[in-house]
Length: 269
Length: 86
Image (cartoon, rainbow over all chains, first blue to last red; front, side, top):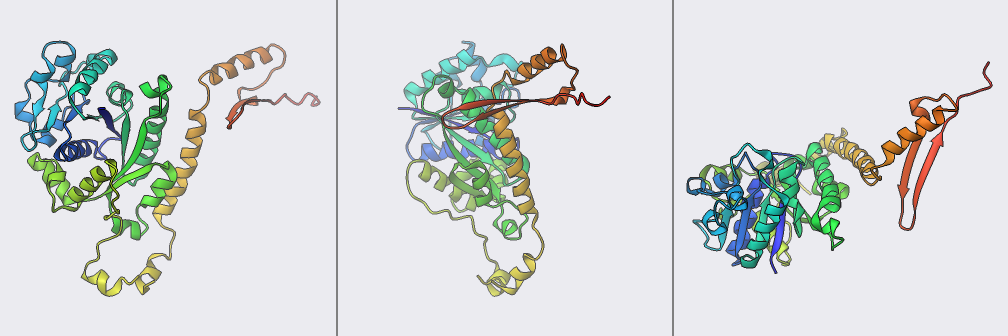
């Protein structure tokens, strides 16, 4: 049975697209046929993060309007043949996505794919609403910072009241927390909310902590999802996220600070 | 605990301030989220009805909605003006 995953946050700039690209690639690398859809109509960027921006011919809106078939619009990833990207349209028409149209395309994708990852735009308007509406699972991407945590909580309220599962009185969407841009050093200094602090406020199942990492910018510079950078901390953290999502038990590796020479000599425990 | 930790923890951290502010805010926003959407309208209409008989201020009426496992409570609180004052 196919599962629809929404990657959402409310707040912008927290790492939704980075996460969508990484987890879609991670699931596909595990052998699950996966599609990742950009819901940010007018501001498409997933194609750039996935490195397929020059291969976009048709987009999500073209498919909804019947101007192209799904097969024409889906772009096969260059690194993994189990992964397909459906880019957003660059139209400025905000109402280009219809609820019925999105539902129709997702139903069609469900026949062929194991996982469908919906990359939500920031905010709580149409694109964000439609990205979460049909979801089975939600990855809430949160930074350890006040405005992001507040917006995540707001998003949780929307997931539990406005989604299809809520409206049809089905089992609620499974919500998972993904804490990104985490700096254990700053947490230690009392300058940043800790994983436990955020957990206490949002009380969600923690799927993973992605450390603040240079590898994320390097990955987006080159258009390769960061999970493919297997040597990087962020890449490994995303790989752990996939393992946990698929039911494997993995310890959290990136919650404690890395100790430098100075820390090793004077840090103590 | 090392000597460095001792100096680090000597002042209240900004993170604990952030946590405290968030806990209060989130708790407040969650209660208002669960309220039925007709509450503001109800409050407005009640105010109009009461004003036919007594002159009261906008903030003299409060409508609270509470929900626990087995019941929902709608609490109305109307503060009448002090009539003894002449």
